[in-house]
Length: 273
Ligand SMILES: [Zn+2]
Image 1: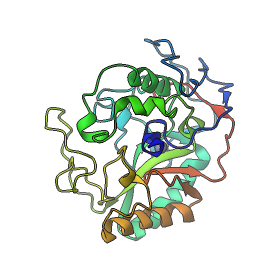
Image 2: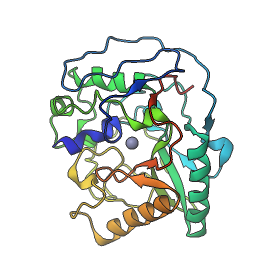
Image 3: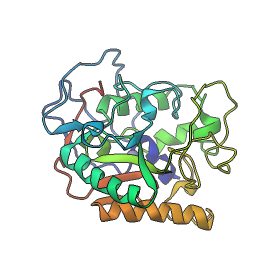
């Protein structure tokens, strides 16, 4: 069951992180399993982006993006604390590596599309608070088969995430030329992220077998319950990303970390602004 929950924290947590040295408001990662340990943080610092981070679009304008945590179309159903703008901020090394992956993808008729990049600790804290409240408005799409309380009880939501180190991304592939994607309206009936692609939210990506941030074993990269075509799509993304220096997290087909990430022990908290 625990493997279902990692989408919320974006991959395996490290047990003893060093809080950000350069963030304006370093946040203490929540202790796994403890009840709502993080106080509300109604305001966020407008600290500048630290040296070493770039906007991915400044390195490669062709990479598509749908920064879900800056929108209501995510598992909490509203913009997440710390996401003031829909930007993909990453370390320069990750951006340049991603640019090289994009060149390979474009040559094969695809484009990368990022869902999440650098994620401030305050966003993780927001997930912790959310896990302790009663809101289940997005259950029907993102965790249709999982009790929300399990997301926290298993100790993952409160953990630090590699995303806060700046070289981890959630992403997928779009066939080019990219199909139109309808705007998320928020008032359509929710469809489980495990439903067939023609029934799920009409994301314009190729069919990976589940939607993004789907809390279900079907989201495991090597899940056997997906079709041959869906498995090939996942393998295509793994191949492109691996050749570009990224490692996939086996329990989330969309989650990749730069193997030679330049920042390994600092978890940042500056807002995406
Ligand atoms: Zn992730």
